[in-house]
Length: 241
Image 1 (cartoon, rainbow, N blue to C red):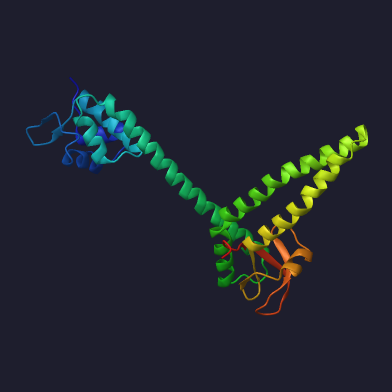
Image 2: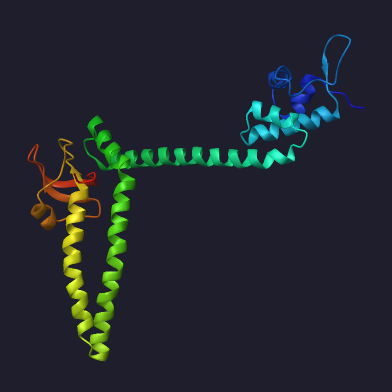
């Protein structure tokens, strides 16, 4: 029967000698025998066990969890539960890492697009990123409510042109006008803007906002703090009181 020293076990499994010794002190990899000089000796079963330990460590299971698994009389009954829990933990960690990467990308994008990038500019990015989900949810609500109104208008136009039925289009207009008013007020009450010069977060007058030129993420407004007139970054303005 083959016997392996601690160093040989470490080399065969691609770990350090200290790691093998640590598993011994934790009681999950006890040597099969000791040499006359007191050196730890491991057999083939120990080698297979070490490979299992290394695999479980690679997928993120803790030493305590692995130790508990080895003490189970029927490890198959708990391994699925352990792996499911580990999978969920890893997905959570991945989500947190993705969120950090998104923030880094947004910060780099802002830094490269801004002539005078300052510490205050980082604060602007922090505000927009913190409220990004709420802002997206607001835009999604607006889109979902707009789709049936637009579909009714298109149907009304087609019926009027090809069938001579005009009242469907008239009904769509009667619905679209109050919808437009309500959705505009909803939009106004849930957004705010960040001045890129003084970094003030503000909500402009409805008339100014409604008629201002804009892009998908900015709107040309006058900052009430510093008086600058230019494009300001749109962000979530919070729930109305």
